[in-house]
Length: 150
Length: 150
Image (tube, rainbow over all chains, first blue to last red; front, side, top):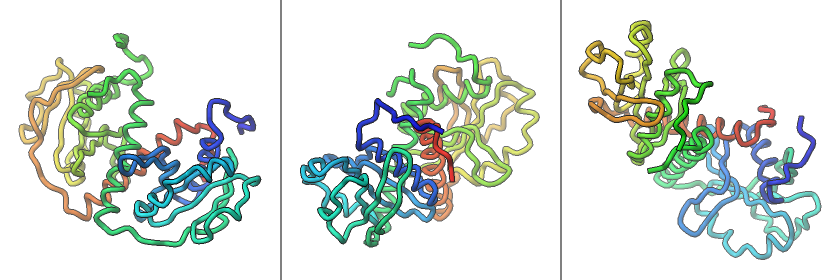
């Protein structure tokens, strides 16, 4: 059991860690800092056993949330969209038609499911292919750090 | 540049490392020790940018090859099948209707392309989903080693 915070992670990344742990328990696998299209970078992209795609944006503070002008752009890349915030966050700020996850660095809980807006099959296929590529590249970089990417 | 062998890897895993490096240069991402179906475990599963699936079996010696009674079972899970062996391996042993890669721990080269036998779309979809899940789980285990999988 690790009860110590991991100092090299930023507050949003600590939330992402708790989110990934919880989603793993629900049967979804995750990658972080995923770029669905140039100019967008999602905090957590989750893939379910039937190819479901969820996006979770992690907000460590009110200021972090208020400065995010891009989140509407994420909706078209997922079946369900969620915010992940800590217990201190003023959740009244968040749109009620988005999902809500309360998280810390160790775990998380889905408080409100994001409403489902299903991806078209062609886009889902692209997203799963990109998820696979992203995960494998990151894994490869950790497994073989001396590899020179061509 | 790492010019030292990695002592904790087995000979077959060293070949797999060189294979993964070379395939990355060709634009394919890889995972190792992938289980397409219970009872089968492939050394290297590669995914190309258009969803192409290649399987590479790494054989460190004649004995290693001769004791493999399962390789025919891999063919139905990929578009192309390859053997990866080192320069000392007696390649005349290998069936000529399979692909051939000469590898070491640092790099590899495709000597003979495996003939293409395309997966059915439904199976390709399953394989890409499994590839994504496998890669993300392994990545997660490295990124967050203290996570308790539910």
